[in-house]
Length: 448
Image (cartoon, rainbow, N blue to C red; front, side):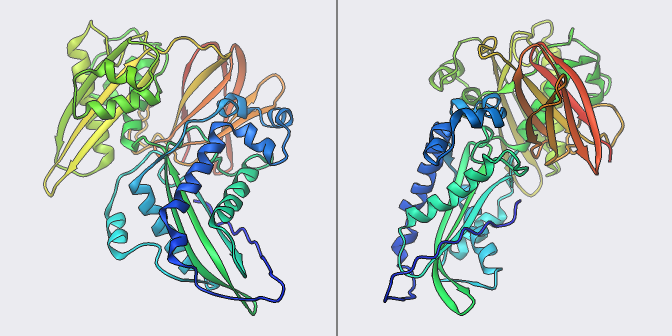
């Protein structure tokens, strides 16, 4: 997680210098709603919002080709409020601010019960700690909370629009689907002056659990090379032709899978209601009970269960290994108790049609092959590694992404061209030359 960013604003009113505690109303839910509304406004039309800040649309597209390739130039999906992320944001706001010697809190951001609840939650999202935006805005008289919120968020957006910025793109990332916001008031000491301050912390996350992505990583590995099945299920023989295009996470199918975890009827109706473009769908589910709480082992176990189901159904290939599918959604429900863990996984697959925007997609997995079996297995993911796509003929850097908590990354790049996909680990550069003439699965084995 990046270090806290301080966005300072000093407002002076001639003849009046008053330091006072902010009324508790300023920390009301409406302030959090303002932050979420502004972020969704940016995501709806990033280039239009940037123009309002003085940027030129065409210049941005020339300097940042990934704006088009990632889909950001056409608008990103809105983020939804998550209670868990809200609790995390409030904990971070309290922890980070109180750890700074020049800031004191005036009033609580959260209460002890909320802190205890958030501290005991162990839900691991694929992008768990990658999307934090924070800031302290100080002033001597009065400032509307909405103004302070805009200062912090605009500051983050300007960083992300800088072609030389090598940090995480958060506001402009299509991966983030959930948000939590903390907004508090406090006081800040700068030299001999004490000023009022607003303390803002925003956390964004994928809606995907790490375990869900781990399972899809393995599905895509077998769709690409089914001869690796024995690495996941001892004694298993290949029952697929192989060479299938990968499955990419689709919002409508992901929402459908999470609904049908509890209600398996009308899978097709759910997908259509959520906006999936066709009724061509596959559906499967598996339920397993484990004696260990190890998440990696459970992801492996539930995938093995799915693989057994698919092998038993062969030659039918209507769910995970149908060659026509190119989209996927996954929903996983884990029930913890003292002796076992019951896990149910629902997977919905479908076909959204061929690319119409002149781009093909890459589904990549970066991993450290600790067991030396030549494939990715849960627990081997290379987390938060930079992966960059270059146009091979010119050497032009097109896009840099960061692997998530499951080692997964993705690109959208112009069709029928040659690219170098490069990652750096411990100063060692590893490049992979590819020709992108279809959607592609790309494993990146990274050395320790």
